[in-house]
Length: 456
Image: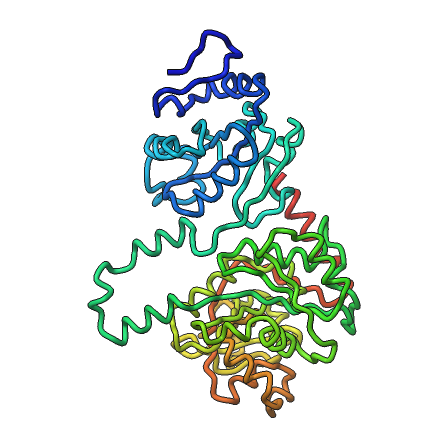
């Protein structure tokens, strides 16, 4: 049992359940440790399926001090954060399992969605967080620092996450008895590795230096990389650039090992596809024979790209081992965009594959009364985010421009004209602000300010 003879006595645990500290007692326990000159470390999470990634996090956290306190979200908190299907195990069961680990000195359940109030009581010397965050991204960062603590980020362990564990549990137990074609597709899908490569060049004609233009507290390219880090695709997130300033900005602002990487490319690359192809040859050529490699091309001037949309592209490529290319589109709600040549439209077949991309209004509505609301087929705006098999992307970069591509000035038509099917995913909640001009940056700043004020 815990020796409570003195409020500042060093806690001594003799039973496993003694490590599970009620919220009303956690401040006293941590104060006693600190009074003994012990360095208190704190980490937190849901921990509803404990796996090797969690064990690594806890072990590295314990190495930062003498006493490790683990905060776990209550059942109600997990449901708010993850949905009604979570947590997999109750808070009592999760706390008991964590308490059994030798690296863990105390476990405390908290009801809030973030551990800010619990950190005020623990007052850790170090707060350790597992993931792809930067310290300033954490809502509890200011609280940790006000208490005199530091923040350490432990990168995710590749191949281990609660999401992947749940996906494995949903796979059929008798996978070996599946028909050969189905089994082969599953094995191919399991071997699919999805990577983001962000092409970024300094010398834009309409807006030189736009990747390094400041948007709020970060540069445009930092916003894009941050969105990539919030997705569930494989690491590293790669920035392909020919500019030393862009390379330095990425290296200085994303120092989490193996999470973000810069690939230097030639200044002679004419398109983003050329730049990505060179990056693959430079960095991932040896991996092309180790399973299927899928590249997701996220433009370096798309600061508001939705991480969930990136994941949707990755999921559709993983689900179909024969799919060569996929992209995104969103419904057009503003009639003025139909005739705007800067807004690229796409029409799809009944299976969701692209029939054609154009700067013109397609499909054309013959009836004068037709509106966006009652059109027979929704008008779709193409979003310039692509997923390709690496093999096709490398081949596409070697092919000459095609007639329709040159007519419309749309590189994706090269794929269609060469017989490659492009799956189109329709997504919503899209912020249609890409930074092509200084005026676009002003619009982005206004959106960011409005979005921030709504959430304050």
